[in-house]
Image (cartoon, rainbow, N blue to C red):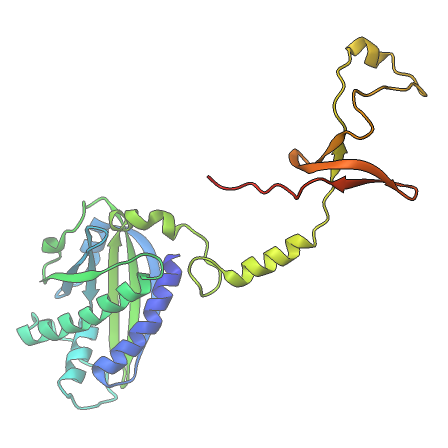
Length: 278
């Protein structure tokens, strides 16, 4: 189900970033893998901006990492940089307060859209918690714990853009684990009314075998072993006694035996019993 959620996020984020930057922005899902938290921290190139966010309903944290290329591209566009067909030059200096503030605004757009993407599955609100430049200060779970790493590629005009990574520890996703394991059918989360109507229509045309059960007669095994061809077995019932109509092991209703032409028939005494849920 996570693939569906982040596919929704990609579509929504493309539109939101276009409105945020007033430029043509295209967001795509690069990869979605499981990784140990400590391994991920060691793989982050410096300098970097790491935004720790809080998942309010799940009472845990996640992290967003924006790479240098995306930071400089976003800052250049938001501050009215000159359009150029040359790739943006990434510098190795620490980020200024203005750059951090602009990245924080971009991440807030991402967190809002991510909450909307999770909404059909489970209510989710993601709030900005803090911004870190040192990965060791962004510890949100134990080093050996597994986490889901989602890489999003953001492409902007004039060869601008970069990568945005969303890290969700498995402990953060644990409250909705059962919801994430369910199968996804169509674009509708939850009940599919079209499928329900089709299934109900087909069930009504299904052929089933119904048995008419006469009242039982108790006999000894010795008498049964003595059965021979042509022997008559007298049942403990009257001609006008009711029979039970049964489908498999389920009793449907009772009926009276009769005859129509050369066929044996039954006349229902009551409607079919419907089991009600407690």
